Image (cartoon, rainbow, N blue to C red):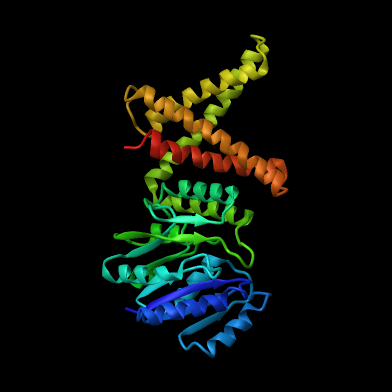
Length: 354
């Protein structure tokens, strides 16, 4: 079975020559019938010219030159369009993915897997060179994705999938992550994750940024219609959250203005009452459980998730405002959106899981 390995590039002149050489060595040593498809987004650093020079030395190298920086995910789908292989592979150009794992992934795809994922988050997998901020963002993104896909690393950029599963599917994610969309929109029944060591790039600049975070959240919202039951639960959860906000404000006002409590104390009581009301409404209405079913345990879970969501809200409010320079009102709106997803998914997969 032929492998078509798609590699999107933008300003990777320092990495792409070394990667092509390593790939050719891996293919030759393991007798893998493969083509390399590099899709370059008009890199201003001259990556395109370097690729053209490489093409004269590597007959199995195909190059797609695009007119501008159109995004990693769309670059991958562009590569799929001209791929001739029975198996489509995807990897980054920055040498962060281990080339030596390609043979194992390829052999697994040939034998019995619809989709093979190079996973950083299963036993044996790890990440080298990331700071705490990158680790938190990655873990947060995976947490949000868990409601749509039951795999350990749905955000991996290193994977192989059978061609027949991708053909005639409308794959159009925004941003730089495409695997989650493939998990949702293709009929992959046998998914195997293989542990990899992800090494942070040593040359070039990371493409991750605030725009990618926004695109990712937009993608999650677009995926909700593919899970109609979850979409209905999410709508109910949001509505109850809105009611809880009014309850919170009402209790805060009454205790402060009429019972003359210090407003911080009032806010604490208001938070507890609102969370309790939200818990009861969500238990009965959103997730259809009987009120007495493991009441105390589930309430503790719900309360802890709510506190976590509050912490997430404050964390991203601070990051967006202080580090990314976004106006604090806009930052708060974005942070509330992230916290809402954390709150819903946390309760969906932990508090009210069936």
